[in-house]
Length: 142
Length: 442
Ligand SMILES: Nc1ncnc2c1ncn2[C@@H]1O[C@H](COP(=O)(O)OP(=O)(O)OP(=O)(O)O)[C@@H](O)[C@H]1O
Ligand code: SF4
Ligand code: SF4
Ligand SMILES: [Mg+2]
Image (cartoon, each protein chain N blue to C red):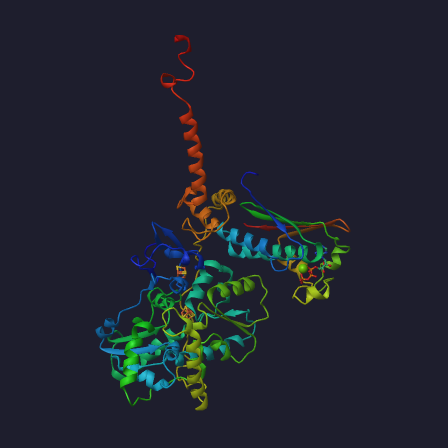
């Protein structure tokens, strides 16, 4: 374990809509317990939630790796899904490839990535078609 | 610590140290120690869940005793609308109010009437431009306190208007001061409450310096007296002040219905409220204008200090609502409508769940906490006195518990010690060792 940093790991199960969001919800609780400013907790929780849901909906699940430092939170969500062919397009508000049955459940407004952009202090999307996607979200605490 | 007043307390004699309450508490405020439940005061939001769930009735709410009424020269009673749901439908609202007054009050003013003033102000407010939605009702003090400890991001969403109880107390007192030419302190204003949370609002208000209410008496404590009077009395006075919009506040959804918009969500029951507040916190309910969140199942009719089952009470209240509707009284006329009912105090985040003030230390503690939790069995059995294995791990990190409070950990320790003892026993001191020693002496 790295000194001064709290590392957390979660599995993100595939197609489990009922439990989707549990990882971000538990990270939110921890940040509150750590005494992180409520505003920053919100930024972290929402952007992580969106990335987590994307992994569930678009990529058969994956894994979350979180590092909490005294001055920042870094969240990596990795999946081995289909990848994103055109990131610029995917970043646009309203763009979605979510199938109907997913949209029926209230997902697929095409707002996830734009929301991440809005709430994260830095957002990095590393993706390769056929290989998978890693989304890295950083929120600064100072 | 210590100085913070809240109403819900434990009756030591009745408590058997079972674990029913610790698991239901929404803020993990209860621990069992030495066979007695203990409430961590700063965490308690007075939701009353533990009162409801305790099979031995060991949890109680501190409210004022009726004797306090007689210490005032002029006595005003302001009943919560949930009172009307407690009595058989043959009794009209005027009957009930008269019976209540006969307990020894000079004047009655319905809180339901003040609720209408709050409704009107809310209606105006939500239609103002540039409003941030959803607004969360502040009608239930337990919910406001929940937000203070668990949802700091939602403090801005709270509708910061005085409660109907405060508005009623102020109006009633002002009226009597004028009418009877009395000073403020000569008038006692007593709220008849369905819950502990309202008691705390009066003794330790979060939204103002001090309450206008002089005392709080539970529905339970006046019930028999009112019932007796109802049986005896034939005629009744005309004491009704409120219309159906105000009475309806006792129901879950009642406050929302008065707003004239469909864009509301009414949720009742503290655990369901938590689910909805999490949705709001994650920005997933931005399309809803108003959220009415009540700690009790069924709204105030399900309050922990009521007598009647909330479903029965709901049917009874419906009759009073219908009666008011027949007379076409939606709401009463108010000359006080333009009075300012904004909160004067500021509700703040109460980070009672925080591990340490220093984030670096907090991170260290969290790391230890995670490790401890991983070592615990994960059964959440409650035998250690904490609501879950994680809560025990938290208590250990905070220095309030030990790993061996866990029965499974204790058993492991005992087994280890037993093995060590066996090993020790097997080692014989040379002077007593008959087997190997003395061979050459034969
Ligand atoms: N992890 C991922 N793997 C593969 N494709 C992805 C992934 N994340 C996003 N995408 C693609 O980018 C599109 C836009 O994602 P975004 O999160 O903005 O919207 P959405 O998930 O479709 O809907 P919403 O997030 O509003 O429920 C998705 O429809 C999908 O095609
Ligand atoms: S009243 Fe509610 S918050 Fe307080 S101890 Fe009981 S269950 Fe917990
Ligand atoms: S719902 Fe009503 S009765 Fe229950 S705690 Fe809240 S205000 Fe009191
Ligand atoms: Mg998405």
